[in-house]
Image (cartoon, rainbow over all chains, first blue to last red; front, side, top):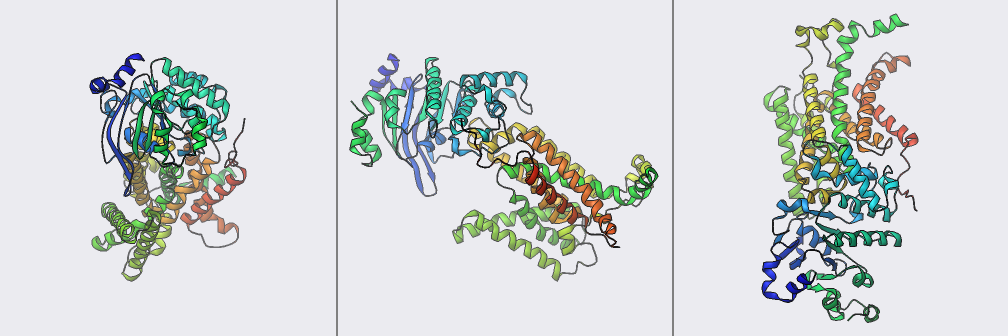
Length: 266
Length: 316
């Protein structure tokens, strides 16, 4: 951890150290129609960190993740994952889209969805086998959902669905986890369960990035922030970057002063 | 009783009914298989759209070549599909309307153009007319040279099978192979396209391949059974199957069963049903097959085990 801080403080060796960082983004621009959703954003996520991506609605937080992973086409920008092109580092990355982005009426059981996380280890033209099911069950256990393995996914609550998504990401056994609003619309128990799994991942030396909405939990859950409002506003450790001034700039004055006071910022 | 059955399933059955039933089953399954994925992707109407679009292409191919053969028909259908894509793009850009509206406009226009083509040109000498385009001519696909069940192992008789039968069989095998080989990819990308893209599945290519498979099924089935049944088979068996199970594999299995039942019962009811009510006539087999598939959908809507699912969430 201390080495990561050193790197962040000394601009000169940043590029050298960032070479095989989990994620390095230079000038990412993504546009839907004529309006850029993300404009020329730089970011550098150090290994073993937990970063919250923060910004108002429509600020391009999700688009930033999707653009970085090539899920949506980008207009410009250079992306390196562990110093490589995403195509060559795919196996080391797990992506969890927004829960609301899929149709949960899909005919699949909980176990079927978790098995999708093992896609990379099954092989072309082959199907999931018994050992994959075993692995998937272990991932379900980690998020406290093993009793629901045979349930149809549409019959779950929002929090349970989010845990299933997390279990699918765990099945990918990646080094770098990118989650899009994992706490959106979940109950308090699920939020605690997800946070503890994410902290587990971090303690194992893995890297976590979350699009996050709840400013009051940022300091508790994360050690770094990336503030975005179409452009990058600021990026760095929570202590130095998650400031009232940066938040005002990110939210363009839309954030009530009382709200910021409640955050007890440095 | 048993003697009746043997007579009913005897030489005459092989000659007159076996091939239409088998062709009906093949066409129904070939459409139902991709229909499962179209339905779950909310693209069920693509099958409908394709069967509309290809009509003017098929008619044009006939007018140019003067015959109804597989290759020109497929080329005509493919050409019509390309024209449709270009037209949709033009309407979308010049009219600045949403894609759905542009598609609706182009598909109906092309279908109407196809029907108009049929009406104003002299196609009466062959079996291509509005009636045929809509309902096909399943009943006429009989096996002249069959003398009984033994003909099934007689190479000489087999050579005179209606060409639609081997053609549809090949199409069905190709589509089944496609779905079997890319099962994981189809399942994952249908459920969660963004995740699929992130794990390296080429979702756009796969989606395009699915539409191509749909188009092949539609064109191959069109010649034998007309466009009504094609539309029905893309939607009804998969929709019924969805109400029977919560697992994708089983859903596909049920859709095959429902497609088969529709084809068999539809053919039998069309041929013999009116007789049971004292009518000397038969009704269109393709129309009856579509009707049966609709009835099955109605029954599964009422009694299917998974029918109550929208908006039902088990809160804990």
